[in-house]
Length: 357
Image 1 (spheres, rainbow, N blue to C red):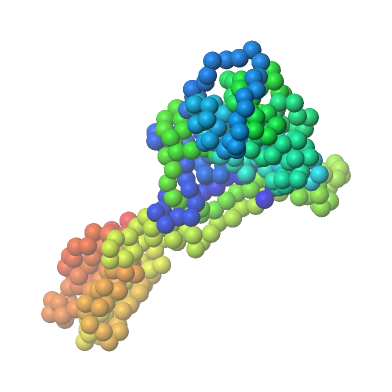
Image 2: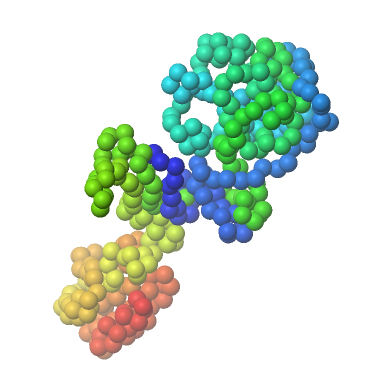
């Protein structure tokens, strides 16, 4: 949305459309698009005093290059030429990595688009499968993983590559974290293994700063009467996503198990047909005690009502049946535990209060 900082709030869920990256030791969590990780160390060939050309006919992919030369794909570099308006930029990542488009946008400070084949040929003098950083005059943004070591990169000449390409000696890039973190990377905090899992994004905070206010001239006068740009932030929460995450984390084969803190109703009163007269004072007493009460007094079989109660998943279920008329008791059940307990109507409110905490 703009600016350079944002914080997402993620809840692990099997049906989530986002990916949460976390450390196996629990000390690092990040959205997939923003996650940072430390890749494995490459297996480098013997170092060279200067880049050395090698003919690679028909080789245009990292996999084919690594196989052709018999080297580790992690010891190659991958060129990603882009355009920022009319300005060409070369993004460079390790051959076995993927470019994070979001990180590159953040690094560049503005949106970009991939170069066309014609633009690539005009800038580099070669096709897309033979591009590299040596000898180019445009800005280069290299991933941090390329800071140390010698890599095989394109020679900007069709059918040729360069061995022994070293940042700082053979080309001078600006460095940034622009790679997509991968499962199995080392954690940047403790070195533990990173794990990916599906998650639902519940909310997001974007620290926009003055990104928009400067562009639109949105200003205010400070206490000294000086005009300054507004400092902005965007704070969003998705109620529907939050409900979905709660259901994903609190359910069983029968239905939802709402936690008491967020349940739409506290108590579900199930009325066995013919017991409506006894159920009314029970529901009224619970409601008067401050509980939100859902009453099922439909003309339906008891089994159907119980199944629906489990599906809806209110924290506490109270069944008003024949025992209410016989001995003044009702059955109470916690949805998450699934066990009935008979209590007197007089003790019902206190019992419900105890179970709801």
